[in-house]
Image 1 (cartoon, helix red, strand yellow):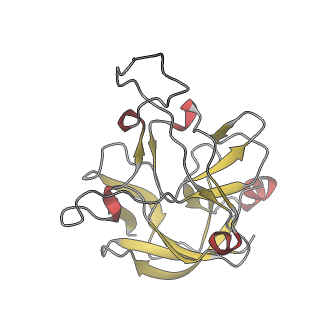
Image 2 (image 1 turned 90 degrees about the vertical axis):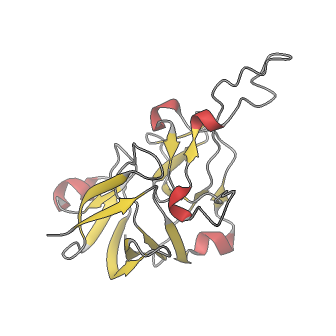
Length: 196
């Protein structure tokens, strides 16, 4: 067994994401506090317009978080170095009191993209990074044997699709591993296609 291990934050290579072409992109709601202080590319969430936040508990469809990467020194940084980190954001003008520049944590507004049946993308985002851009993250996804993935409804990260009886009851999308691959920086990744 060779579980997928990555260094840094989750990455996405959008091979064939039709939501980008059709404009099925939503990015006007802040993340719920329950989503945590780090939002990685490759995680899934729901655009819960009724509550006014991006969360894991809304009634809508699971959408892929794929933010534009903001890297400030491309000689030293790569895709693995980017994630939305709450304490790097300051409150917007509607959240602040006049002349309050205290640097309090701000709201993060992730970009969510619909992943439709037949869409293909490459990712290594299988599990939460809790240590930063240089942290090592080992997942429970076996690079050599995994065939199907689905969204873990508690975390929003992709996981092995094992318990078909339980997972069929959920509204999680299901992905088939099409190819064992690498990310642009050479780390292990999986090219996956949505089949349900």
